[in-house]
Length: 443
Image (tube, rainbow, N blue to C red):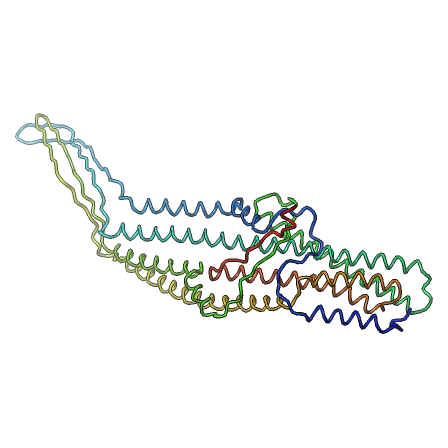
């Protein structure tokens, strides 16, 4: 058997088939149908719902909200009253007489903050609550996007592993047949070596896909709050992507309104403004007012005093100047952080939009049954190569193109899904919807 076939039509047919499959445009309509994992029962949306219910890190954000609300209660409370007292011995002398007795006093004073100070503390505490809620909502959206991407990545890795294993087994079976034959001449020997090398490469791809499956499964189980070794199969789903945005300025406007990072920076800036006002308010002292009572006994004399006490520190040496300067500097930092974050978010929005548009254009060039056509072409090439009607170059190329088609199709879909998740986190646009195929609904 020679490296170039004496019959030119098989190679021409194979090359023409490849060209047609690669160049025929078509709208992306459904997922690849290659070898769905048996027993698939989990959809992407179901996994997202499960993760949002069971993810252990959600308790951290719940506790953060609870702590912020507790801080709001503390900020609105008055200081506790202060009780002070004293007791001693009194002795009276004079006129040839002397007397002794007990003298004691007690006072209760209530500290009062300078007007407006408690209100400022409440405002700062309210912003802490808002920041806690923003962190919670941001984590939920990021968690949903990550779970969706990981779940599809797990499905894609399983599909790649199945396809690579299929090709590797095909080359293995062919190699075993060729080894049993008597390799008369150099060409059959070289063809055997080509098949062996291609088999090893397919096995390597299958192993890499299996490792990617395990990595995605471990992280997905961690986010779902289940045991790391819990087995999981992903249902094949149709993903309906939004059309690519035509006006990027609209995306930037949405980001200014909905982006969690910008909202956090804006709240921090407003909160820091209240901290500056609080530092200025704290230049003035707190006032303590309350009743006082004292009694002195000496012999037959008894003296009682009832009055009102007033105390306040004199702000002579400490006018809180250092704290005011520090708060103003922090306010400037918060303003700069907001401006820097806004420019960074604009860059990220444009990058995610460009990636999303590019991946959608790539998917639009694929026919819905492209992978199935490659698979059938690889099977036909295997049968005809055994009959001597297809040269080794066409046979190997078709097997490689089948694997490349599966990988390219799934990777493009995953990258589009990931960029859509980034856009949702950056701008608030919803992710593509996943739907169960009718065949899986019957299962």
